[in-house]
Length: 303
Image 1 (cartoon, rainbow, N blue to C red):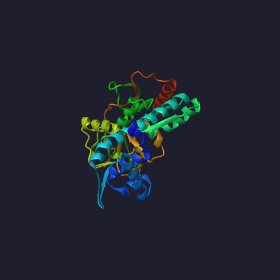
Image 2: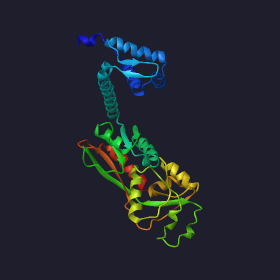
Image 3: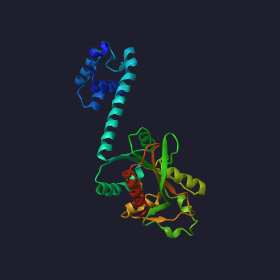
Image 4: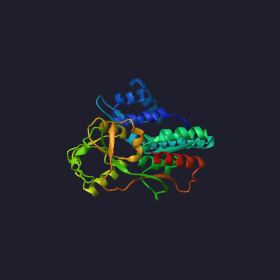
């Protein structure tokens, strides 16, 4: 404890050190931290003075860690991570005491069914509903660590401290521009036009796109060129503009009723998109989480 008595390092100093190390530049680090280079240098110098050692070797063109700096960096990261963990725990406690909930939702539902659902939920239960919209892997980690009350997405988890409950299913349909010459399709099984029509898709890593791509392979559909976008809204806009066609879950179509598109039933019924609520094993599902789940499932099932 005597060694710590004279050390008064701040969170800001540790953050500054880590950003300098990550960017290898005082100029870039100062921009990220919204401070002047002189102010950043002063923070690092004060930290080094308190620790009684040099952490960084500076030159006009580079910034490198000294041996002492290399040894200290893991502890600095650990300290900041612990503080972040503590802050999240306090926020979770405050949320529980105030009766609010915090959920993680995959981007597809977050962009479509969630806003109306949350609006109805908060009005009916008079409580907050904090939302994290991110990739499923990230929100499942937050559930596992206790930072989210529940996560909603296509993947079912029954291991690694998580448990899933099925919510609803949605068929996949092909959408095309409103003026698409559908009359050239001779029968419901005639999909030759796909070979010359661009397919507008999400990234191959996206949960919905993986389902679609598996269906395309299983049915041996003659897909030609492919354009990828990060968001469904972009896909829908480009289909409406006549740029190509796309496969989408049918439940989202009502949120794009204004779009100049039409749908085509698939030649054989694909595996439907399945949707789940995932919670931490051993953690009771609160009445409010159960209510939000039921409201979200009902919203997604309605046409």
